[in-house]
Structures are given as structure tokens and as C-alpha cells.
Image (cartoon, rainbow, N blue to C red; front, side, top):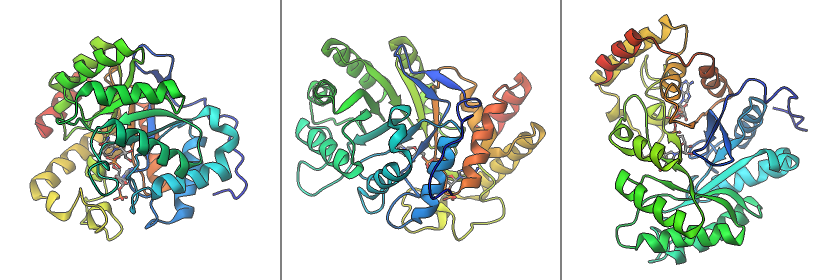
Length: 332
Ligand SMILES: NC(=O)c1ccc[n+]([C@@H]2O[C@H](COP(=O)([O-])OP(=O)(O)OC[C@H]3O[C@@H](n4cnc5c(N)ncnc54)[C@H](OP(=O)(O)O)[C@@H]3O)[C@@H](O)[C@H]2O)c1
């Protein structure tokens, strides 16, 4: 890590950039998410080194949410500190996103999709990151109890106020996406991007969502592409003490997910990856990027080594029909 950060001059030469839908924005094929590893429970210097490396590798997009940490809000605060120290001069080279939708504060206005919650939440996020605007503001999840017109109206309002440059949605199903896209278009704030969960182990977006996004000309940035670390060599020899599955702060992956059947699949996938001269993480990312409807793959990383490994995926995103078939036989 550099104490006075001077980014590499060649940082834009290797990364691939893909246009998000029919917008003017190009996203890096690999983006970095700050859900884990950037909270107050994590090592600040490690977080800072990962962000410096990411920028040096051509990653221009950093993804946050109001509640990332733990505790809630601390990933935004830490990101704000690192931005001030290392990347302030490069603000116009960055796409910074945040979201609101999940539980953030007590009472009836601290989650879901009301105008009240979304507007207050973005104001709080901007303060935590010391930013005047974010590039993308997302509705983090659909809300059955709030009219979609209200939720989309709040995104449109924030864009028109200049607090966000673009609007995005996350975790919306194909029908909700179509409806949201229509409302946003009518308001004059087209939806820039959708953020669904998609990986070799999570195939739901193939059941309609990717087609809707292509038809509506909306970008797609996929989260948990490594199934939170399962689609890597992390668990091949047991559960390391410093891994996400072993940490009590990570509520979404635990040792119960690492079953003998899952391990068998990971080992078999790892063999195919080795034949392709890739790590399993690289193959899992490349498999997503082979589909041009995927604008960006949103990874997490707990170390500089993992980040570097993952970015290496872009050097081989082509698959033979046989490889695709062999992979399919393992994961389906
Ligand atoms: N919109 C939403 O609802 C939503 C939900 C979830 C996530 N997201 C976004 O998506 C981002 C990524 O999600 P994610 O962190 O679950 O993604 P992921 O890339 O599937 O998992 C990242 C984790 O896998 C392990 N890992 C990564 N690269 C590795 C490598 N090369 N070798 C071995 N292990 C490796 C690390 O875990 P260890 O700690 O074990 O090292 C790392 O923290 C989040 O930060 C967030 O921005 C959005």
C-alpha cells in the first residue's frame, strides 16, 4: 500500500469496459463491492490497499449500500476516508454507487421503498462518504407495500436534484423490472442498471430477467459471482478461520452451506478451470462475462491477492461448447 497514493499511468490499458444498456456509461468488466471487508470490524489498511490496487487495475466502479459494514454505515464512512486520502483527485474517473432498501434505522421509515426512506437515506450516505453526489443510486429491493410509482419517483427526484447521476434497481424480478423501467422512462430518468445475484450456482436471472434487461436496454451488474467464495479454492481444504463462512459477522454464508455435494461440484469445476489455465474464481467470473448481456461482474475481495486473481479473469472469457456442457453437467 502507498501512503501517498500515485496511481499507475497504465491503469486503463488492460481492463475491459462495457456500455451499460443504451446509456453513455461504460462500466469496468469487473467492479468491486464493499459489502464485506470494509466495515469497522475490518482492517482499515487492508481495505485501503485493496481500493488502491483496484484503481490501479482499471476498476473504476465501487459499489456500496447504506447498511454495509458492520456496523451499518461504516463501509461508506471508511470508503469516504479512503476516497479523501487517495482518490479525491480522481473523483471524475469513478462510478460510486449506493443503495437503500434493507433495514437501516429503527421505526417505520428505516427500510423498504418509501420516498421518505430513500431520500433520507441518500442524504445520510452522502454525508458518510463526504460526497456531493453518487453516480448510481439504487432501490435495493422491491417493496410490495409501496406503489412502484412512489419508489421510482423518489429515484427520479434524487437524480433531478443532482444527488445521484443515474438510477438503478436491485433484486427486482422480470415483471417488476419491466414496470419500473416503464415508470422511470416516463419520468425521464431511464434505469441505468439492474443488480441481480448471478453465478454458476445461482441461475435465476436466466429465467426472464436477462431478456427483459436486453429488451429494455438496461445494463446488468451481477453480484456474488463467486457465490461468496464457494466458487474459488477457498474451501477446498476445509474452512479457513479467516474465511467468510467462519466469521460470525457474515450472516449469509456459514459452514452448513459447505456440504459434501457442494464440495464435490467445486472440485470438479476446479479441474475444468485448471485445464483452462485459470483459477476457479477466474473461470467463474469469465463464465459470467462470456454473456454480453452482463455489463459488469461485481466481486468482493478480502485481500489484494484475491483481487488480483479475480481481475485475471478478463484474459480468457471464451469457452468451447464442450467446456460449457461439462460445466453445465456439474452445476445443474
Ligand atoms: N444488491 C444486493 O442485494 C447485493 C447483495 C450482496 C452483494 N452485493 C454486492 O456484490 C458485491 C460482491 O458480493 P460478494 O462479496 O458476495 O461477492 P463474491 O465475489 O461472490 O464473494 C467475495 C468473497 O469470496 C472470497 N474470494 C473472492 N475472491 C477470491 C479468490 N480469488 N480466491 C479465494 N476466495 C476469494 C472472499 O471471501 P473470504 O472472506 O472468505 O476471503 C470474498 O470476500 C458486494 O460487495 C456488494 O457490493 C449486492
